[in-house]
Image 1 (tube, helix red, strand yellow):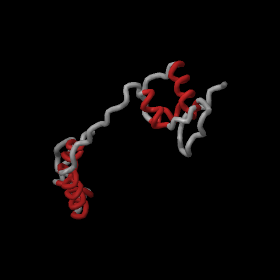
Image 2 (tube, helix red, strand yellow):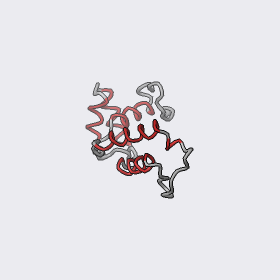
Image 3 (cartoon, one colour):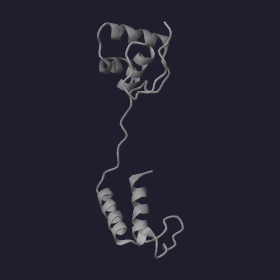
Image 4 (cartoon, one colour):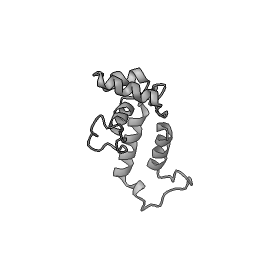
Length: 122
């Protein structure tokens, strides 16, 4: 959802209006409580000056399947001492993609919380 769309919903709620139906909220609705109205106005004001987030440009091979030739280059570069960032630049991948691939290939241990497949059988 875009920030401006979210802000319109917040503004509508802060006016005591149901954002989907356009009907006035019941008098006992939490959206008619002064503290809630102030909180909604505060959030709306904070979003007013926030620029839209520009998506970052991904490397050319990000998200693409790994070819055997790329795996060979990855392993050779890693064995030669290249760090993950250097390998990512050379292979047109994200650093996380390279790190995950190295974990999957049994070359690096997974970081806590990292979700990757088991290492490939050698």
